[in-house]
Image (cartoon, rainbow, N blue to C red; front, side):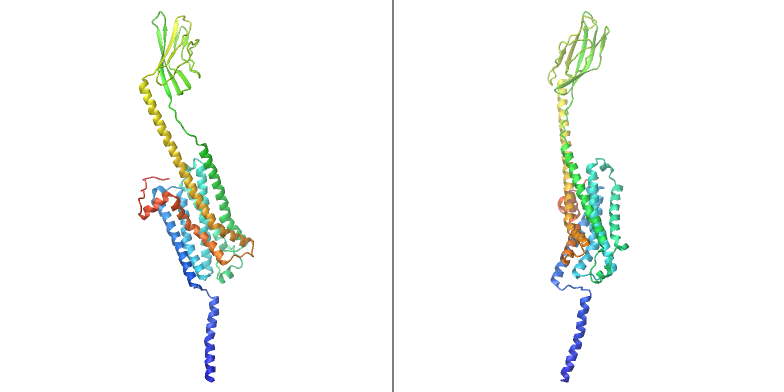
Length: 462
C-alpha cells in the first residue's frame, strides 16, 4: 500500500508540470498551428504569391529601364507604381504571411507599429499611383499641348505628391492617432492598424473612396473626350488645283499696234473657275483687262461680252472670244486660252493626285494607328482600375463598416481573405501589363532571351 501511495504521489507530481505547461502554452505565442496540412498549404500559396509579385514588378522596372521603346516620361509613373508594389511584396507580405500561418502576432508592439505603417504606406501609394496615372491620361487626351509640356519635373511632382500623401496617412497613428485598446490588442496576439473610428473613416476615405471617385470621374471624361474626337475626325480628300494659262491679244484694225496680256485660269473643282490677269494694256484711255467672276464671265472695262461660256475641260483647248467697244471704234479683243503643254501638265496632275492620295492614305493610317493605341492604352488602364476595385473594395467596405458600427465583427477568416485579396492587386498589375501590352510583352521576352522579340529601335520612344 505504501508503495502504491508513493507511486500515486509521484504520478501526481509528474502531472502538475504538464498542466502548467499546457496552461502556459495557451497564453504563449502559437508558432505552429494545430492543423499542419492547412499551415503547409497556406505557406505554399502565400510564398508563391509573394514570389510572383516580386518577379513581376522587377520585370516591369527592368523592362522600362532597359527598353528604349518604354522609356517615356509617362512610364515614370509606372516605375513608381511597380516600386510601391515591390515594397508590398518585400516588406508587407512576408510579415503578413507569418502572421497568418502563426495564427497570431508574437513579434511585439514596436514591430507591429513598423509593419502596419509600411503596410498603409505602400498600399496607399499603390492606389494613389492609379489616380496619378488617370490624371496624366486625362491631361494627355483633353489638352493637345500637354504631350509637349509633359516633362520629368511635372511627372516627378505627381510622384512626390503621391508618396507624401501616403506617408502622411501611414504616420498618423504613430503621431498619436491610436485607439485606447491598441496595446491590449497586440498583447492578445492581434496586430492591426489603429481602430480609432475617426482615423478609420479618414484613412478609408483618403486611401480608397476618394481615389476611386476621382478615377471613375477621370475615366468617364476621358471616354467622352475620345468619343468626341473620333466623331469629329473628318475624312480628308485633297484635290489638286488645276491651272490654265492664256494670252489676251488686242489688235487695232488698220494698224500694226497690238498688246498682249497674259492671264491664268485657275480651277480647283469642275464647278468653279477664275481668271487672274497678269498684265493689262490701255488704248485711247480704255483699259482692256480680263476680270475674274464667280460664274466665269469675262469682261473688259467698258465692254459687253458677246461670248461668256468658257469650256474648261482637261484635255481640250479652251477658247474664249468676245468683242468689245472702246473709245477706238475699230478695236477688237480676242481671247484665246490654250494649255501650255497639255500632256505634260496632265501627267503632273496625275502625279499630284497620286502623291496627295498617298499622303492622305498615310495620314489616315497614322491617325488610325494613334487612335488604336489610345484605345488600347485606355483599355489597359481601365482593366487595371477594375482589378484595383475588385481587389480592394471588400477590404475597405469591411473597414468602414467596422468603424461606423462597433458591433460589426467579421470572422477572422473573412478579414484575412479580404486583406490578402487587396495585396493580390500588387501581384496582378504586372500580369495585366504582360497580357494587354505588346510593348511590355516584347520587353519581357528580350529580358528572358526567348522568342523572336523585335529589338528596340534606336532612340525610339513613345
